[in-house]
Image (cartoon, rainbow, N blue to C red):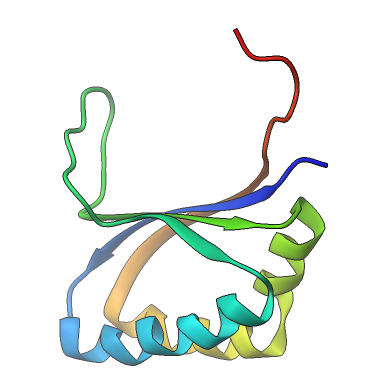
Length: 100
């Protein structure tokens, strides 16, 4: 079964206001089996536009990734983030077919 992923791109304009969101996410993601694959790190935008922070979170499957996003815990946490940042977030099913 293919894993599920959150791919987030964020510009934070108030680091202190954003911190409680980031801290609360740890317990939320753990509850749904999420783990960081990318969280910050060196960045070189070679095409298109980018945001200052990038994250990829892996979940056991797409349904679990969606359940995490729709959970009361995460929906409440979005309200903590929004006044302090601008974010793009997609939830996508991974690929588990043949590889080159």
